[in-house]
Amino acid sequence: MLEQLVGESQALDRAIAGEELSLKDGMELMNFENLHMLGAVADITRKKLVGDAVTFAASYYMNYTNVCAASCQMCAFYRKGHEDDAYTLTPEQIEKRVSMAKEMGATEVHIVGGFHPKLQLDYYEEMMRIIKKNHPHLNIKAFTAAEIFYLSKLTKNSVKEILSRFKEAGLDSMPGGGAELFHPDIRNKIVRGKCTGQEWLDTIEQAHNLGIKTNATMLYGHIEKPEHVIDHLIKIRELQKKTGGFITLIPLKFSLDNTELEQEKQVTHECSSVYDLQVIALSRLMLANVLNNISVYWVAYGKKLAQVALSNGGNDLVGTAFSEEIYRAAGKPTNSSVLDLANMVREVGKKPAQRDTFFNILKTF
Ligand code: SF4
Image (cartoon, rainbow, N blue to C red; front, side):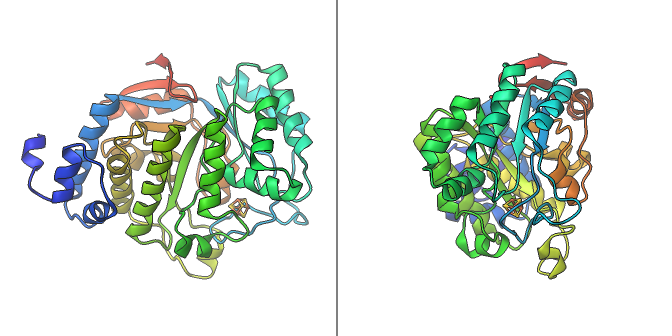
């Protein structure tokens, strides 16, 4: 199969040979017209690295507050605090929800929120302590690097100090949100009041140095050009070479509804499925030598496209996402059970496997 693909493009040849791809290679692949061939090379690369298992976690998503000091143009979730639907959960309310999720089979709790200008560090510590006390084996995957960076500015503590305190309070891992796209030409037009790309990377590097593994994300499908996606992937790759602390990359398709980018008509439609598949394939090929896992976030894609993406380089479906307010705010359905996800995987001829946060297999189907 691979031999038939050699000679179609220099960049594709380099990908087939397992070489590290440059920005120029990435551009060549993004402009490569034969999506099937690109997807096939990404799929073969995926198979070489992780085989045919497609993983997912039983994950509970919780947003502790939607009050946010920032006002990103790509966000439909934030409130300023005075609106009827602005909310902030108490640590006790959080624990109650986590207990319910645990009963539903969740093995991790994914906790993120807005940049609340009044919450202090003890709120976050209390939240984690109470969860750990009642559910010591549940993985607390909480707070994006952007939240941590905001908290360091708000409370005048260093990033390292905050991460150390949070780790002590029970933080096991961190999600990859807040990365958006690092390139300032794009970032400055889609986020307002959030850390720079370099500050996100520096914060994550400190987390990795403290032994806190994290995911990475990449928000695409809005106003970027292909070079900005490739630039982002290269920056993730360079940090991964340094720390080895990333668990998976989750490319996030931009969800348009109710965002300022939509209201101001800067983006009038969501990106095509062809572009989605190119991004998944490119993510696989650009990161092939440093990261095994490329996650397909089915909540944003819908189940059918997510299934196709599993043959274009993806090897993971992220998780059940019991309750996920951020995507719901932008009009996407979010609940699915472990068995639904296993069926999705089986339907495309791959082997479903439930995993934990760190991709250890817990159960096969
Ligand atoms: S993306 Fe995050 S930081 Fe930006 S407005 Fe929304 S909740 Fe706040």
